[in-house]
Length: 434
Image (cartoon, rainbow, N blue to C red; front, side):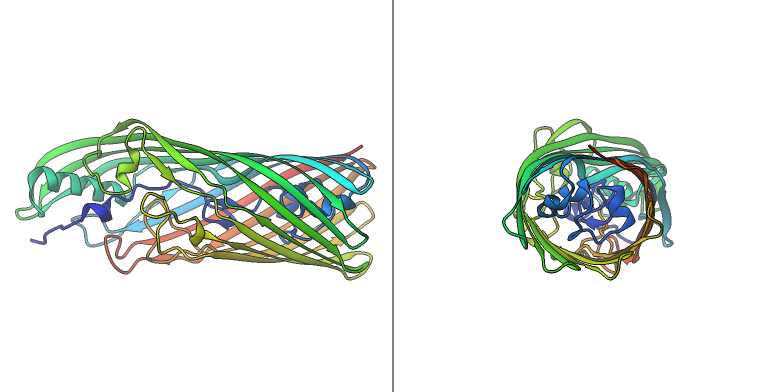
């Protein structure tokens, strides 16, 4: 019979239960319904949500107060296919748990040559995943545990039932100001405080089998219940350049958000597996997981009285966020990027429509994929409308669909595993000015 040699360092992969959307690894780009309408907003000058995209451009809003509020619903389909210990064919596992509300709230006061602003957003994470039948990683972890107990590489665990429930949610408050230096240039400076929470709940029922004889030797039930929390602060610098009546350009730099996540563990039945990252589920364990620095830029072109064209790009310094063995990033991650293009069209004096496309390269690959973190390159298409309901109130609605390039692992513990995900977005919001 085959010996199931599963090094603890490889099988301890119960790492991250996150719901990555447009953005990069943890970060989320879709922080307003206006963005969902047109995902190339890095040089836009037309809404309070530009606190997230072009803070320096807020000086071009009409004088007075501007409030932008929105909520996005995400219908998610995540798929993991892997070969369980003792089997030769892959088994598929799926999570369809929705994110009912991804909120965003922005407030801007614009006067003379300056603007003051604040925001409450979800800059990273974004919801919950529930795999009702568990994941292959549970069987891998149990196999390693039982091989240590029996002192035999031929022992393996067959999972008869399981469930994995994980969430990742980061909440942030942003405060800052912008100033118009000249008719061409304006600048912005802001700070953002972010608090992050990750939860991990997993359980499985197993039959322990002697691979040498094919006979069952025991049954087990094991669970994990842990929460990781952390917080950090970063700065945001932005510059806007109104190059002509038709062309506007902007650039933004967000510094790294240093975050040390601390674990509170109520239960960890796999605690005997002391290799990383299972050691990170021990109560009181501290681990770095920074939100990476971001360099963003864009340009808009007012083609005519009705049509505005836009191009945006973001570059994520993910390699810089890697802090060594005690961080939660795989060393094989590369810096990521995304590029988006979009247009807004004034259909009538009161109705504007938008259409856009965004491509995200998350810097991952076969060496970074596992059951709980598969940062796949993504394509995102969206459309939406803004309706001027009154002189001081705009209503926003948008739809989007994100689909990924399938990820596949061709060596190591997860050899033969494939990963995929797609997300349907529905957003509604408003912008009030007074």
